[in-house]
Length: 186
Image 1: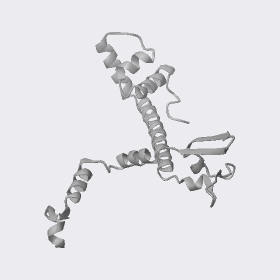
Image 2: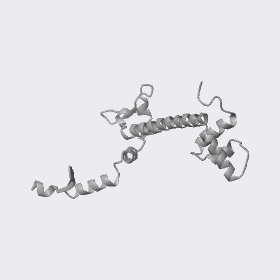
Image 3: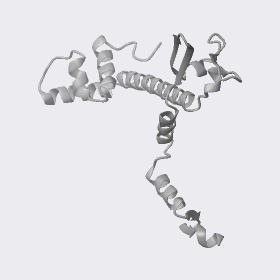
Image 4: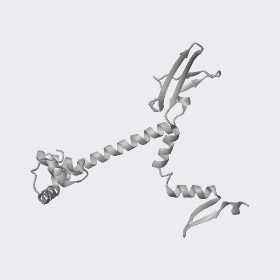
């Protein structure tokens, strides 16, 4: 028997609205259909509902559900960014020795490859035909992955700047030290 089955309809709605509005108990109380009272009374009554172990259990269950869904969505977004960032046009087209371009068979193309294609167009004129294949923006996808992974953090930017000017930062047991790469090499 799932948690919350012995709750009233209003108690279930209270828990659902509480999770939906990110923890505003008074707003959840009113949204669930409880009678409108003074602000103080609504605060007191909603607090009582939050103390109910069955309502707390349902709130926890709903929050865990949302958390799992969010994690899945984040993983899917990262997966899609990786597909685009590491896509390779050679997986989409064949180029002959003469420079002719032909599209690979879509029916055998892995989904990771086909999802990296932004546009395909074909033009036929008197002088011949041309095929245009455009993948999604790899640089933008790499930039976003870099941001997500903290490569654009202040620390990494500072370290890269030091390296550009010939300095290396090394961590020791007593903290960090800066070494001049030019002095050590010459």
